[in-house]
Amino acid sequence: MSQDEFLALKERTMFNQPATYVELEGSYEGMDGTRIAEAGLFGAVFARGQSALFVKMTGPSELLGAQRSAFLGFLDSLALADPSGAGAGSAPGGGAGARAGAPESSLAWAAPYGWTGEAATSPFRQVTFPKGAVELYISVAPAGLLANINRWAGQLGLDPLD
Image (tube, rainbow, N blue to C red):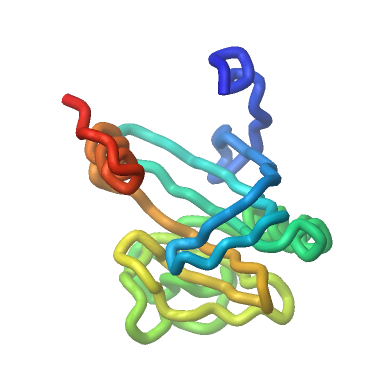
């Protein structure tokens, strides 16, 4: 992606501040190695300081398009949880509490209608919502920009940057 293409990416409001929003299509390989030839991704990145919050929905293109409104509604539902932690991982205004086995979250959300959250499957994930071949999840990269770039470079077999 060129600098001009990057600067032209759409924005969407998250937490009353701008966040980067993307919709991508192409082949996709999940963390479990499953490959989807005609896949799509809806994504929002909320980056502040040295950390970033990623909200992604992935799946086969023909299924993903039908879930766009669910994804956008989920983004709109994101809020900071009750500081006491009582509402972490729950729907704003009450709802199910934090999931067993999930990392503590400073976030609250409303699950898309008919979707059920699962315990985190990686140390970066806050929650995962699977629905058939489509998956919606929140992940956090708190280690700092350089550490995350080097983690991603390592996943691609590249040498770390300094």
